Image (cartoon, rainbow over all chains, first blue to last red; front, side):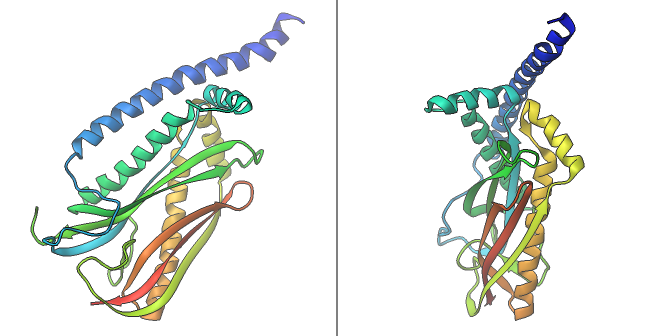
Amino acid sequence: MDPITFIFNFGIPLAVLMVAYIVGTLLERRHFASIRSREASIRGFPVMTFDRMPEEWQVRKSELFAGSVVVSLDYFKRIIAGIRGIFGGRIKTYEPLLDRARREAMLRLIEQARAAGFDAVINVRLETSRIANANSGEGTAGIEMLAFGTAVKLESRL
Amino acid sequence: MDLRTPQSIIISNTETIPGKKIVEFYGVVTGNTVRAKHVGRDIMAGLKNIVGGELAGYTELLADSRQEATDRMVQQALSMGANAVVNVRFATSSITQGASELFAYGTAVRVR
């Protein structure tokens, strides 16, 4: 095999794999840093997964809000997950992906409700759905995380 | 995404509208939309897929579609004379390759 075909067959895919791994890891780290700082800024804002409110709350206004995000795994981690799929067991590469997507969706929901002047979000629900790949029909093009809940504005601030 | 609704209707995923009382039930209202992915967006998403992370084009596409499904549900409720939709639920399913159905449903009611 001459060197040029060798580079085309192995060199380029390997380079893409490395770039995917490095850039993907950096992006993930940055995303987690942003999630943590935004979570710190909304600490104390009441968010709950049930719809019973304290009796002293006098609701003036309510509105449905939703926050969503579509994410995908990088190329390198997808291959790792694929290999893991053969042997079974815990797929560690997917766990942080789902975690950050879910937290991002929740943050979007809460940040919007807060920016619109609401005092709390009640009855929060989280949903996950897979978006099929258009080209091959297999694999995962993306995973959507949806968070929705009812934002309430109270008569008097807590 | 803020689910935009007309001023004359309130929607909520709770069983009642907080602070209000249900005086009349009209039944289940639904709204759906089936959307396929856009070629341009698909190419961009394909590139983004290499490094992973958020696929912003898809996030926007699904948020728009969900808004449309909600709008249809609200239109149906309005045509029944309702002024609120309670217990709203969302469902997503991939129908064929590259197309998804977004579905919104709830109970149309009159509140006071």
